[in-house]
Amino acid sequence: MNKTLARLSSDVPGLDEICGGGLIAGSSYIVQGRPGAGKTILANQVAFAQASRGAKVLYVTLLAESHDRLFQSLSTLDFFEASRVGKDLTYVSLFRTLREEGLEALVTMLRNELMRLKATVLVLDGLLNARESGQTNLDIKTFVAELQGHAAFSGCTVLFLTSARIDESSPEHTMVDGVIQIEESVFGSRTARHIRIAKSRGSRALGGFHLFEITGRGIVIYPRLESALAFPSTSERIPENAKRLTTGTKGLDERIGGGLPEASVSVLVGPAGSGKTTWGVNFLRLATPQSPGVHFGFYETPERLGAKARALGIDLESLIASRALTVIWRPLTENLLDKLAYDLLYAVRETKAQRLFIDGLAGFERATVEPHRIVEFFAALTNELRATGVTTVSTWEVKELSGPWISNPSPEILSQLDNVIGMQHERVGGTLRRSITILKVRDSLFDTSVAEVAIDGSGEGLRIVGTMPTDGTVTDDGALKR
Image (tube, rainbow, N blue to C red; front, side):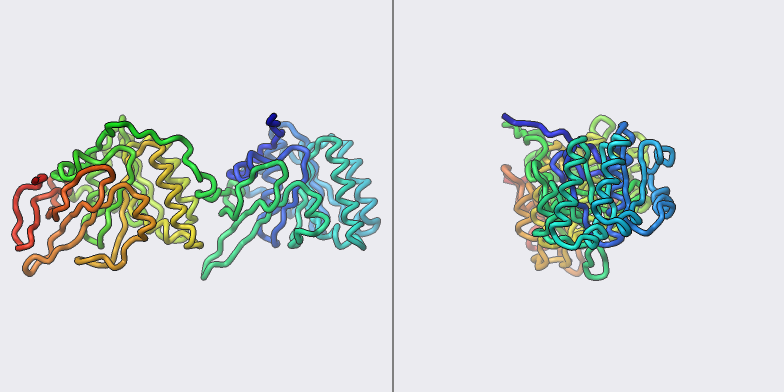
C-alpha cells in the first residue's frame, strides 16, 4: 500500500519539485552553504510561505548579528511582509543563552518557545555555533536528537542552517531526514549557483546539481531539464497520416512531401547570411490568433527583427498586436541554460503555439557552464516540444560559406532532430548564390537536389526559384522532379 506523506509548500519555485513533492512535514533538514550562498533567503522564503498559510513559525538565530540587519536585507524581497513579523513569525536570538549556558539550556529554551507559540516550523540559523559549543560528537548528537524529538512531538518541521561543510558521517548529517546543499561555483570568468538535495528520506528527489538564481522574488530554482523531464510530460501521439504544416517558402513544401510534419523538430544548418532567419520570419508570417507562433531568439532584438521583416514585406508588428505571434529575445550574454528552456516551454504552453522558431540552438550551447550536459539537455527539450504538439524549426550556424561543413553540429544532436535542411552559398561563375538542400525528413520521401533561393520584399520573404545544376545554370521549376 502506498502511503502519501504530508508535505509543506515552500513557495520557492523549483524547490518542491527537486525535493520530490516538497519538504516532508515534521521532518528535519540541514541547509548548508558558504556565507552568501542564499541559505537565509531560502529559509525565510519557506517561513513566510508557511506563515501565509496560517502556520506559526519560530526563527531562532545563534548569531551575533541583530535581527534589524536581517529584516533590512529581507525587505528588498517580494515575499517579505513586515506585518507578519511578531505575529505569525517570531524571531528570537539565543546566542547569549548558547554562549553562557550551553546546549542543554538552549534545548530547554527552544522546547518552551515551541510549546508557547505552537510552532509548526522551526528555523535554527547558526548550527555551526551549536557544534562548536559541544565538546564531543555525543553532545551534538544529543542536542539534535532532543530537538528533533520535541519538534516531532508537535509535528514541527525543522531547518538547521549552517555555513560549515558537514561531512556525511557527522552526527548531524546521519540523524536529519534531509540535507540541502547550496553552492556558488566559478566557471572561467563567471559564477553559477547550484542547489543539490544530498539526502532525502521518504522522497524521490531529483539528483544532481540544479541551477538557481536570487531575484526580487527570492530564490528561483531551475530543475535540471534532463532530470525533471527525463520523460516527456505527456505521451507523444503519432497519427497514421501525420498532418503537414506549410513552411511558407514557395517551392519548398513540394520538395519535402507537402510540408513539415506537425509536432516535428527541424534544424536549418548554414553560415551567416544564408537566409536562416529570413526562413524563420517566412515560417512565422503564417501564424494566426487561432494558430499562434513563437519566435525565440538570441541574436535579433525585437526591433531589428521587425525591421528585417518590413524589408521582406512582412508586417510582424500586426502579428504581434493580434497575439498571433510572441517574440522573445534573450541576449547572448550570461544566461542560465535551464532557465532558457523553461522560458521557452512556458511561452509555447501559455500561447498554445503551433509554430516555433528558435534562432539559434547555439545560444543554448553557449549558456551552459557544463558542456557535457548539452546532448541530454537537447534530448529532453526536443522530446518535450514534440509532446506539446508545436512544430519547431531551429537554426544552427556553421563557419563555412560553401562546400562541406567542417564545423558540423554534434551528430548526437542532429540524430535527435526529425528534419535537417542545409542552407549555403554556392559559387556560380564569379558570384555567390544562396542555395537550400533537404538533407533529412523523417519517414518521408524528399527531393535531394540543390535548389537556388531568392530573398526579396514581395511579402514572401524567401522562395525557391529553381534547381541549381552542376553546369552553373538554373532551371526555373522549383518543383519536385522524378
